[in-house]
Length: 257
Image 1 (tube, rainbow, N blue to C red):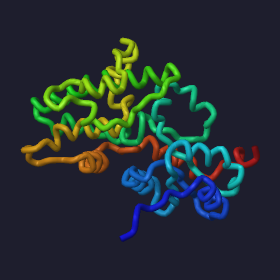
Image 2 (cartoon, rainbow, N blue to C red):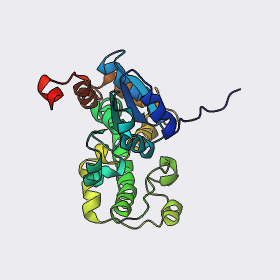
Image 3 (tube, one colour):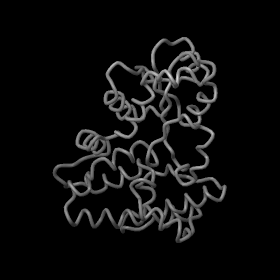
């Protein structure tokens, strides 16, 4: 039985691009392959070769070395992650295509209102209560980031929540050193949570209602993402349009510049 596939290093990907003859779409994260394949299919079949790297840091390191593969058309797509809360950090990477939301899952969730379509009234009320808890925690992490401290945004949703009531787990809050975030930070997340909070946590927040024991039918996180992809109005359309624009041949004026 074979083990997990090893991720290619930055040097290996740069070498692949340098010796390539195709158009490449460089993306981050093997776990989002389902989404990226859908994105490539929505652009133009056969137009792009998908090249996955091990996270955004690796993707941006490859971007900085793009002079080494200048003869090949390479398009970069990256998650904003916490930079969505400090957009000036993206200024050093002007040719990268960024997700509209925190990450690509956010763009999928915004394309199809699955909560409004699939949840009963009582489930929606519980989702809203859970979202308030998630906002309380995530606003703390955003504030940590904005103040130059280490933000921990990858905690699993079950670890954040109390097992018995719809509240933050006291043990989690104590371990994390959580304190109430500034009202302005919390208000910003409250105004646009499906764009500004990490999409993976939002998917699992939805699954707390859609995949709960006894519910018929049940939809787990992977099914939720798949439903949004297949049912959304032009899911990932914004990213696809930007990629199509990069694939167009340069105009005579651009070519001469």
